Length: 251
Image (cartoon, rainbow, N blue to C red; front, side, top):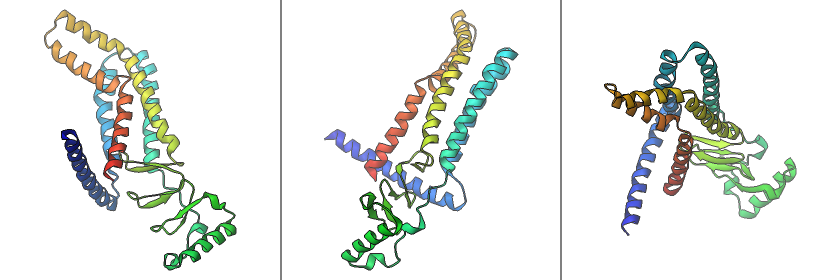
């Protein structure tokens, strides 16, 4: 009983935050600002400077920097490009011949059914692949086409709406969405290997008892666990998954 009350309270708070973010999102779109893109860009910059640029600038020899630095920057470019492509890829449009008449929804039920059958014969579509007619967009929805209430658009072959990226994942950007996780995992493994020597160096400083070693060790261990550990990608996936589950509960 207590747990269910806590769960309902949490979902109510999460729903309120979601509505607030939706209002901010709608306002920001009027000014051409994409909030998830800004947040992710800021996060990537905040991670890059202290944990990539500074360690590689003031440590390691030249050849080590060239080899691992080049590899890391190539992977980082792939991560950023796949993320930007996923967010900025335009929604695929339905063909114009799938649109119904303006007064279609005022017709009788038999007239609607006959019109859809004739429309399918006209365009050569299989009637078994027709699921419904969208009352918002006014189009005949084919199989796996769904109307997203958040984006307010019908999307062919829609997979899901990513509440973290504030973007529908469809056949146009699904590949880049998956590649984003793959490149991120590859980047984390490579970065962990490249900085293993640096972590051992600070571990030895801590063992020898140099002044201030506690702060250095805590800072670098925190960076290692939260940013460079291979399980970070698992945390990222869990975060995406929980966000989608909670969004489904409150919608």
